Image (cartoon, rainbow, N blue to C red; front, side, top):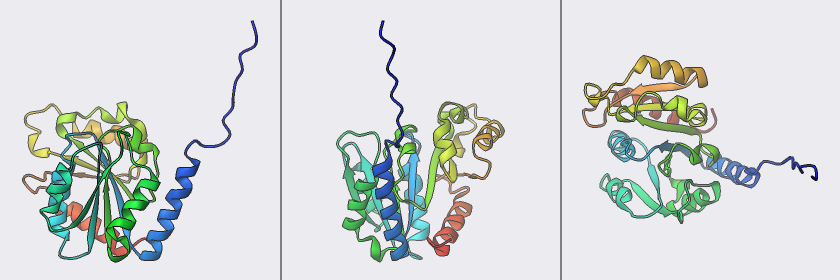
Length: 223
């Protein structure tokens, strides 16, 4: 039997995306526009939390939202009710966005006139973690109903993000969710992560989150 051929990959399969992401980052820095990549699994309350955040920030800064879905414009229409600029991406069935898609969307939404852009990524905890978009801040949402064991199942996502929002904390009496276990497992992966428990429905924790976010935006892309 012939010896098994082994191919060593010397170059990252993400190399082209990384170059385009850096171009996005450079452009946003020149524009003084701050961009956040928002990730979560489907049903985490991502759009509801985003609406609640926008209502607290929209009178203070210029904001644009890039909504990504495989199909439909349901979330974009919801965001539109806040009066904030929003565009919808249909990504042709892919499980993530890449930097080129985001660049086109930044041009379309007119990022140069905005202080803050949010990319609401495709809902899953696997693919989006692998793609740099040129963002300044990576944020993910984990909802209480999803369970506290997700850092053990999806470590790459929890390693990547700067901020973890634990959403739907108003449902903790219904679900068996251990905040201490969650934080312990998350900090093993990512010791410097910021964690904000919150409820967009009741408003609990939203002030602390939006104050943190506004400070990051006001400090800008140069810090």
